[in-house]
Every structure is written in structure tokens, then in C-alpha cells.
View (cartoon, rainbow, N blue to C red):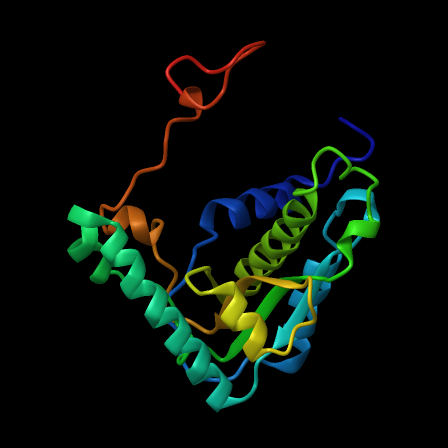
Length: 216
């Protein structure tokens, strides 16, 4: 046994959180305990980041009026996305894509401004700042699932308009609206799979050795 290995129950818990994590859209309105929200933010802030740049910024949205403005932004983009989908427009419009007005907490995750000064690990791959923020969101997502709290990542919005609403400085960019809250139940499978929007690809179709996966 490896010296640094977790116990079997601890390992099982990690894999369970990964397997049962869901992008939630249906929430109960009861509040999230402040200490619990702080634990989720702690998990996000302890994510890995390229060059230890920590490019994430978190904005907790407690104003109902601001939530409603954000909801309107999402609805505008939802309609535009539906139009762009062509023959899948009606299928898309039947999907619930956010829980902004229902969830106990709403947190916007953004990229900080002045990121150009961080070139360690980004000189040839500048998008590693975005990858780092995605790691922070995933940490938060897995912690939320372990805590029995739902989290939904909303990306259907105009980032320029959302940045304006939130008073972000030039160069900062919103990446995600996170709806966080109590749920009646977690979906047994990913919602888009249950709605027959898409299916998870077999792992063999996305993995190969020494060259690009055949047929990928």
C-alpha cells in the first residue's frame, strides 16, 4: 500500500462525489448556512492555478433586484441560443437552464484584471487563467455535492453586460454564474442525458496512446 494513500472509505467518497456531481437547475428557496458557503468558497480558493496566479474572483449576489437583472440577461441569451440551434430550438427551449431566482445563493466567478503580468505557465498558453478558474469551480462543485448542496453552472449570458452590472474593472471577465442551494433530490443522471439532449461518450472514444484517438 502506498504510504500516502487515503483510507478506502475516503477514496470511495472522492469517487462518489465525482460520479454523483450534477449540474443542478431545481432548488429549494431555503438559505444556505453562512459557514457552509464559506467552506465551499474555501474549496474553490484552494484549487490549483497555473503559476499560482489565483485568477479567480468571487462575487456573492445578495440583491434580489440584481438577481432579476441577471436573470433577464440569461433569458435574452437563452432566446438567442435557441434561435442559433435551428432544428433543436424547441428541444432547447424545453430545458431549464438556470435557477437564479430560486437558489439560496448566487455567486459569480470571474477572471481578475491585470492577468497579463502572469506569464509563468501562460506565455504560450494564455488561456491557462481560464483553466485555473475552471479548477476552482470544480473544487466547489465536488465539495457542494459532498455537503449535499446543489450547484448549477450558468454560462448563458452576455459577459460584457454582466461585467457592467457588477462593476467589474476593465480586463476582468465573468466566467460563471453559480446557483447554489438545497435541492429536493439530485438528478439520478446528468439532466441533459435524462432529457435526451446528449449522452456521455465512451472513454475509449476519447483516449488513445501516442497519437490522436481514432475517429475522435
